[in-house]
Length: 332
Image (cartoon, rainbow, N blue to C red; front, side, top):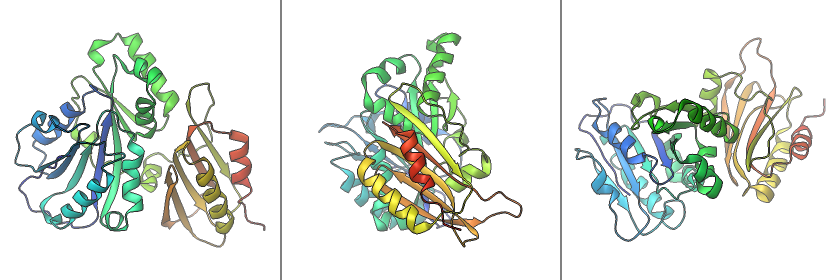
């Protein structure tokens, strides 16, 4: 892995935002990272680069800046070296005043889920960082083939909060529309930016608050609406809404059992819940089996108090999930 930092003083020492930059081999992740590091945005970033293999070269491909770059070799950040990631982030927290955010560039073969889980399961990391967004760079020319032969490529798209649809100059307009439609089949919630050479405003990549469900709902109030469709592809999404208040004990028991049994298939789970006898909205999120949740403020005056939940994953049994969610309703 590799890390980088600028030279200005950081005044806000709250939880530091973390961006996970992923994408299949050759999609353009390092090109995008170099744009981030070379633009005059006046912010400092610690950059952690993961390579698979004993000898790393990605560090040498990153532009020469005054930022620190931490490189982790001989393992994929999503598996054997997650402990290294926790240690690196912990070390960075001791110098919190030196940077404004952390960027983690994964190997092209990484499933981003365990990386995201790191910011849920380790208490020290969780208390001092905030997962801002998972940004996936996609090669418009080759992504359809990669989606056909690689679960990793599909997972990277499914987990994305932001998709950088890169190398658009290498395909026709019709091909590009077909690619975007395929990406939408896998993940209908991510923001998609079409680019050549990963050229786009950095403000569309960093500080998105996209993994923050509350902020997503502020920007897109219909984010959790039950308009999901089913199709025959491997990764699908379904969403449900109930108008009765939710019994928190019933919900915790149901979602706990569901994640324990089906968590390997559930890539992302997000929900806003209206708990019984509670005037605050509860935001629930999970990555595979790892779950997190907290209250995110009161329901607005006149706002319809409904509970909504979204599942993105494989082998989703829509009727069973709907029945389970509906069984969490409180008895009036």
